[in-house]
Length: 364
Ligand SMILES: *Cc1c(COP(=O)(O)O)cnc(C)c1O
Image (cartoon, rainbow, N blue to C red; front, side, top):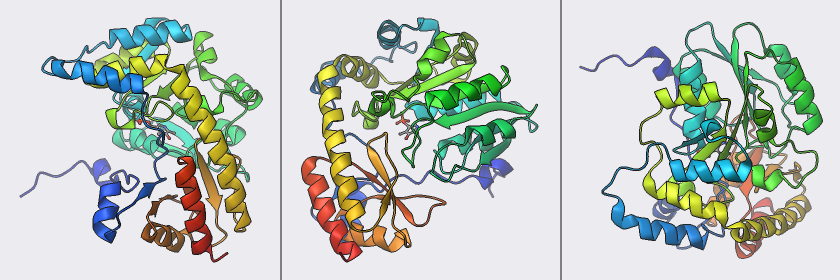
């Protein structure tokens, strides 16, 4: 006999991660596998983060600092936000979930986001459970903020906006966002998921979510050490939020949600500006190179503000995905966009190899 599982949990699906390298190696018997599927930093973590983790290893018999004081303090100083408005968690995934846990309390509540966005927003609503409204995108694969504003009603509690968006790589501009924020009732929390902030920030049109938090608006800006900082495996994310929300999250989160190694790694990575700059330079070159090569095969490439390309193949993506995998390249199919693939920028060598494999697969 089994105890009946909550009906809303039965409707949910486990997250489908990008295939791990070891699994593809096992299944296909390939020696060399290149993973361009999960938007990780191909350069690796900052050497300073590696050193910090090594020196903290001998103390993992101790519980981590549940308040993550050192890391929060460094984030507070660096970004000019009071510590009481800085949150840290086991990846920004956890923060997304905790915001839902803290705010949604009955079936009448609603959450709004866009189609073709990050699937973790669904879980926040499904768990409550409450209604998730998914609004259509613009024709150029961007969040349609006026459609989102129109979907907000008296039941809406949270709006999730990925900026830049995953999987499409697009942004909402400062002008669009500010007009939208004027429209939104103050009691609705607007979550700006800025996992790719560092890749986009050089663009003058790109709004920095932190500014709206600093102005005291009902906005949360979520960031992560998983992307440009190269610490995805350690699980450490952070955010800037109104004070009422950090207090509420402190009640629902696990007491030791971010581990001690992740905290020291994040702290060291935050100070390694050179590693970030090097990563961004390598990414910019790779993005441009891949765009040219992919377009040469007759595919469309949406302008990316991230470390990945959203590629329209003009034909079903599943066989292309499989054929690339047989050649040792793992990329990412996109749910609800069956003719598209998401391709992460690799090292220069990985990009060259991918371009060769892509040309062969596309028959050019
Ligand atoms: C990668 C990603 C995250 C998750 O980052 P973690 O900190 O590793 O949990 C959040 N949002 C978006 C849009 C992402 O692409």
